[in-house]
Length: 102
Image (cartoon, rainbow, N blue to C red; front, side, top):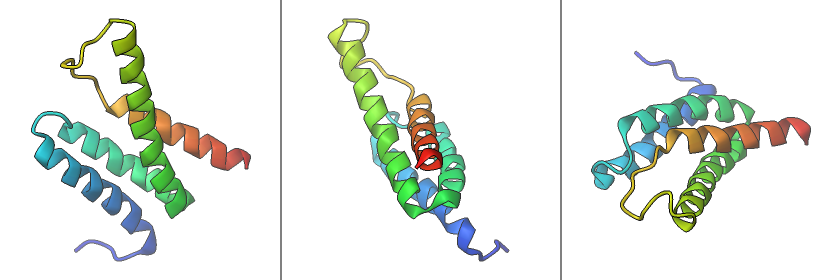
């Protein structure tokens, strides 16, 4: 049986949110990204719910900016699939470092 502790809910929430996003994507968002989101949910959830939300949002922003730069420079097209895990990790790192400074 799974433990029922307050620190267990952030990873479950991040996993569930990315899993719900991955199911209709059908190849756009892989299950590896969902698992990375659960790990980042555990780390950012330890810092707080706000950091978890900001970290996931920052991951989407980093991914979007990287995709726009690659498309603008001609290194990728709109049909090119890009890995999302590094963007999630970069967004989580940014939020974690920012919360440690402030």
